[in-house]
Length: 238
Image 1: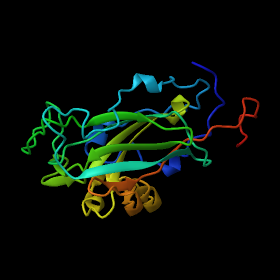
Image 2 (image 1 turned 120 degrees about the vertical axis):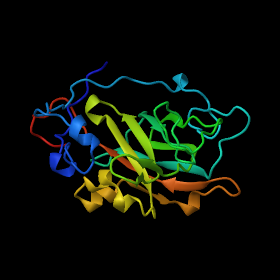
Image 3 (image 1 turned 120 degrees about the horizontal axis):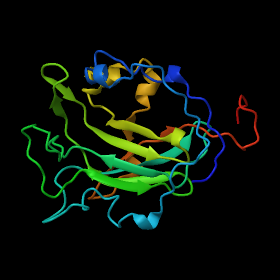
Image 4 (image 1 turned 180 degrees about the vertical axis):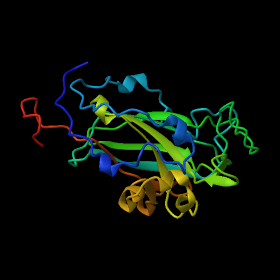
């Protein structure tokens, strides 16, 4: 791993609390002791495009056995930038999701919706030199979850990003505009800032739709910013 300039301090006020009782899983998952700041003097692992398969970015086809995945075909795209607006090139993005019926290919998923034998629900890709990314998938379905009685999670896609340093590691979820379940979701309710909530919602990008093929959604992602050089004082901002 290579040295990299330290990252800007994390703005804890811009993030939801780790403990949000309305989201029951956070009661057990949230840390019980003070967090250790991570500004990262070391770069994250470097990933190579040649390590990715030709269909890793195409969830419609990358697990197909007897035909493409069933569901509404989507193209999801956008840019990954840091908080200073600079592109983050060569970032590895891993995505996973439920199928069109809202069922994950996971042994602990007991939802009654059927599995799609041609859809595994996972893929990976990398940003280009301008931080741009895109992948193909199907729209995931909503599904019930045992947070409280008869609750349903809005349709979403999970993202895990590896940027230029460990401090840029991000695991998050992308929602779809117009979904009425977003406003009812306890996970979303843990976020106090409406602007931050809007940042989790992808918008239809009609100009990027592919005729007779796929609808397009755009979602831009922001990672932590990095100082310009290794020689700045610890309190300086880029």
